Length: 287
Length: 253
Ligand SMILES: Nc1ncnc2c1ncn2[C@@H]1O[C@H](COP(=O)(O)OP(=O)(O)OP(=O)(O)O)[C@@H](O)[C@H]1O
Ligand SMILES: [Mg+2]
Image 1 (cartoon, helix red, strand yellow):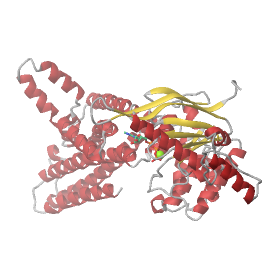
Image 2 (tube, rainbow over the protein chains, first blue to last red):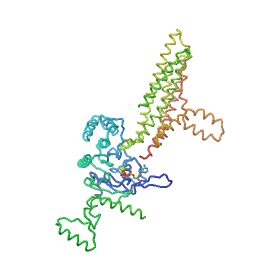
Image 3 (cartoon, chains in turn red, cyan):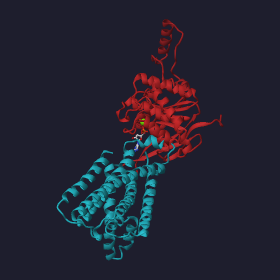
Image 4 (spheres, protein in one colour):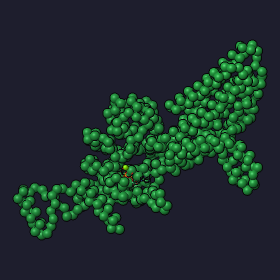
């Protein structure tokens, strides 16, 4: 277990942004420690402004950690090799609007040092796969938001990376597209890739991820397998199964007699997420 | 790109305009006038193109966030900067080259007209040395390389394109005035000497590159001077290029 290759490892990763006021800091990421196994799908979940994108930027060497470290296959994010093994889908799709989709892909492929022949084949294959067949010779500036997002996927995959870092992959994508993103993540995992996924759309993420981490105000509130999180997250929650209506009523009235509270519905990831974030925020106010 | 075309058109039109207004006869001195006019256009528009293209290529990339997917690829910031600088400088060189061709063409037309009219050769001190024009253009390219590198330095630091463009033009003006300023300082008090010495060291003298005189008459140009200027440009371009790379390396995205 200890010797297992970790695709991504964060250790005490911290990021402070200095504010306009002198000596004041905004701690966007707070001692984040986690590791992501190779060939797994990790979901980093958190509300807006919780530090997901900041974490990712540090993982890519776009931003320097204030403290702690990040590593990719044991390599520093600044190393060329580490970055050649990562595909990155940025949170906001901004690409050179004066290039066509195909030219843009060619440009990125050249940056990765892919041989020309292979590159041309791969470009067409990827653009077709992401439904940009008809648009590939049009200027990127004329693409719709969802098309840009698809182009982002194609661009992330052009170097055939081992790790994919997807920052809000479903932003701006229609429900059909979002379902496709899900299938796509599953297929990546089948190919042996590692996926780090950031999102706040929990229901979409729930079925995809092997592990999740829940982030709020830069701190990791909970992490692990979804089943485990939901299982021991709330000891007092019981799920009733295999009883008929009358028997269930008996259980409920029994619980009520003893002063217990019975809530309808199942505890899912979304509940857990809301509860953790709420508790964390209350705690903040208490301090 | 559109701006580039606009400037090119401006340059060509002003040259043509210069030709047109020269219809009243100034004699052979007018060749000198056209040449000076052309050199001025090259310097002025070349500097504008150098500053704007560099800011657009470097800061524009940061501003439009298109830099993120590029730097997430195995590309170092230094390589990114170098690529951009080569792109900007290439644009500038093309632009200056086109202006130089237009100027040579204008001069040639005018020269043959004058010769045809007067039927005699032009006095040697007023004749045009076309190689000199090319040399002037080449030295402008060197000068604009320095200017592009200084602008790149400000672009990597800037948080708005206004700032970057402004500082680029500022550097241009200071660089042009440097010769005069240094003279004035040196006449002043000695206590200023260290500051002025430092400043005159970090600010390149952009006027050194104006070799307009070489284009007239039978003047031969000094090979040593040209090599010296190229080295001078190389040193300052490298200095500011490295500074820009350093600033960019520490920039957060
Ligand atoms: N360059 C920056 N300068 C100052 N503060 C920043 C900067 N980038 C991010 N922040 C702050 O860091 C915090 C975390 O931002 P981040 O973009 O990581 O959030 P996020 O989890 O990705 O949110 P979202 O779901 O909205 O994308 C925010 O409070 C944000 O204001
Ligand atoms: Mg984000």
